[in-house]
Length: 625
View 1 (tube, rainbow, N blue to C red):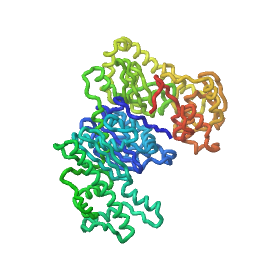
View 2 (view 1 turned 60 degrees about the horizontal axis):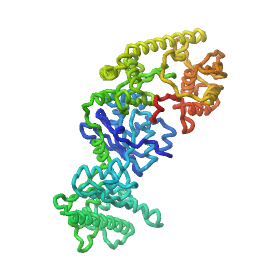
View 3 (view 1 turned 30 degrees about the horizontal axis):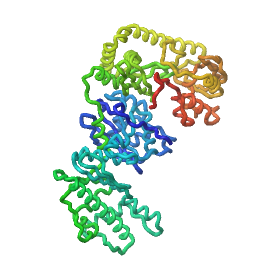
View 4 (view 1 turned 90 degrees about the horizontal axis):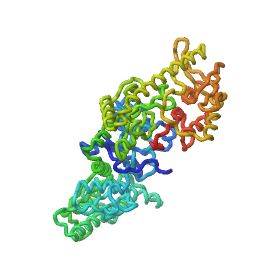
């Protein structure tokens, strides 16, 4: 499976000064290690750490991404993404909460050594307004600074933290985890090199797997044994008299002597380089860090028997135990990458525009039965001048696109008129008004055209609303004893965003792909309650664009649908299919057809996603979300 997560590019993927929090995730061999960071004012310091299992493929096939994401979050982080702890774990909720943040898209930075785990993280955040990118080793150290192609990004992130925390000092960093690694940097911040070997637990598992009759010693057992030896000051015997003691004394002695050997080599290098004013630092991280620190003390802290005549010059270096170095390294890197405050008025306007709410019209229906979609400006790709910028917009339904400067102006104005979907509330109203005024000042053409553009938009909106009313009345008269409860409209009379052009073959498929499919539609009952009626699409009534299809209901009423009606009815059918007495099994052709029409390439869509099957055509060829 190819990687899904975009590699970070600076400065485009640098955090914003408006980011109040970011998340970093280290995707290792066995777990996902998470951290919540503060914003730029506190230096992107990680303040909360937690660990979860990786995302299973079974979860991705069976569950909703937001539901699974919520299971991976502590309550403090859950409130940042989904609001209050008791809030629903739904993408609409996540979009609404994001709209209230200074920077709507939550920045997520991945340090990954596992592509499967990395792709699982991408899936977790797919329905949440977010900017998910992965970091590479060259983001932390250049080849000139000693980075090589195959060095693990987790190792260089750890080293970067050491370099930043202990400037102008030689540092030897041990990571005593599943793998036992060591890497060194010199006092100029360049990588000297390092090594990799199995960790303590991995050595025990390896012997148990490959040697019949040898027991596997688990983490808790050998940690308790180490604790007892230190308390009793009775080291493991070199010549053991039990199988378990023989395994432990050999493993511990090997790692202890190797660790001390490497420290002595670092001390020799410092001396050879003529460094006398800065003591080198040995930094130890990982689950077995306490053991490594103990064996660097004189007499091995009483854990194993010391080598005769081989003392450890412990007074010549400092030893520090550190946790979560990967996350600290990410935070320290981002501090260097965030753009400094600018005196340029164009840059200041760009910062003002980030996070603004906006609204655009598209030739298909939103959840509320209108063709108006709300979203937020996530990032801006600067052009030669402000009017050449491209604005990356993430809509509340998960779609995204790049739009141009005049389109942003129109979308901001439309938002001022329609507000949020259900409440009509206008979020960040002062910021939106300020942005509109600044855009008019920056673009003389936009300012000159503003009255005409605003008048045209209002006419289009009024015409669209009138079309809704007329269509609803016509359907009610045609249906007779049922009153249509939905407010879906026929083709809008304005000039909505253009769809991607279709080929003749696609149009041909489109005419027939819905034939014989089951649909559902809500009508008002005798007490004005919502009643669901089922029907079947039986033929095409207008074979040229705009296409219309004929629907016959199970009670023998009939109606004509355009494509917006079709998609909405198919969505409603997926919700109420269990109540359809005519249902004959999974309608795979509908699911597959909608998936193909929506541009999906990953096979049939889950029923819960069928409702979202549509295609928004970005103004500049589109971007991935």
